[in-house]
View 1 (tube, helix red, strand yellow):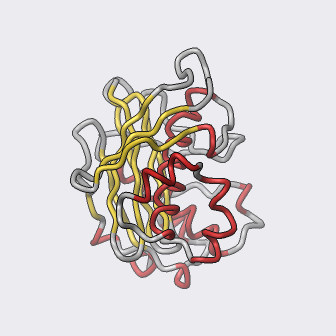
View 2 (spheres, rainbow, N blue to C red):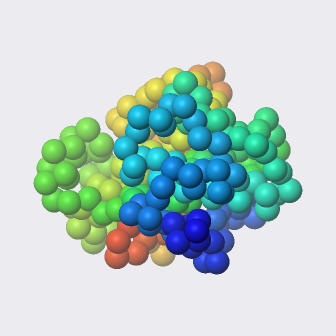
View 3 (cartoon, rainbow, N blue to C red):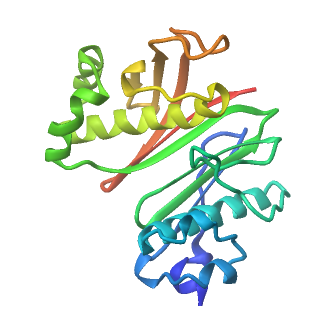
Length: 234
């Protein structure tokens, strides 16, 4: 029955870089039921016991594709628990990141000795009213100038910026163990030709990640959504 919730025959490998693997699965929230955790051999965390159906379904899909991705590295673990900050706790020798919308889940994993930092984020294009509400929280005037040269709509530009900074946070948080804001990093370069971007820290996060540290990322977009991924080779 799990095949109706998750399309297990259509797990997609997304080619990004040789240092890590990226896989995607599609799922149907309306076809979720709690027993699927046992059927798919995924541990059901107590923290989800009072969560709504949609949240449970998204968690299950995310953890399933994470386990699938780890098995492609010949790593089979019983559980990928969540830390106090709700981020996944990966095996010691693994860098990883999970993201999802309400119908897709994507995971990137790689060995830490090949990929030091790894974060990815999938976002559905924002609506105009969302842009007007949060734009001032996501980008500054300098970033607006960079984004304005791309020919994107306001919705596309802000969704990209939001996603890129989410990917940065997911990549850096395991290293710095502290929260930081959207305005603590600045997008300095975007190439539509190569689907790449550069983002720079605007404040010191740690001795290893001081202000002005730069990171490179990639993005893949379609009519519905954008996927950003940020990584650093070891």
